[in-house]
Image (tube, rainbow, N blue to C red; front, top):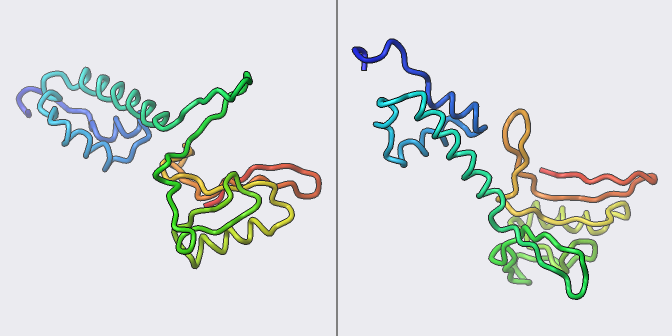
Length: 166
């Protein structure tokens, strides 16, 4: 390498900066691709193609699981981001009945944290609707991705707001 190149770009940092993935994730993608040797053939082209491929696959993954269903006789559509496997529950062990959610029951992971939160949200008169968000739902922020646990729609003092809660 020293004989062929004056300097090689820091490919992991470059791809990480362009795709907003962590360096560890970029490293894993590169290693598991088995194509690291191609980097030495043409570093600039490899970097451009890797960024393009990762971005396109991130987009595909982001929309995976979203379905649009035409409602009977209507011109309106509903967008579903929930996978049916995420909604399986044992009603006496990991679900609590609620009135102000998009479902009749909220499936919880923790009886000491999530269940009391669901009950408190359901009993709060300012909460008009809430639901537990699937773990694959991510929000991009300037400091990285954010995976909120809950979406809460409030009407407090006449002001309506939607909150994503961690």
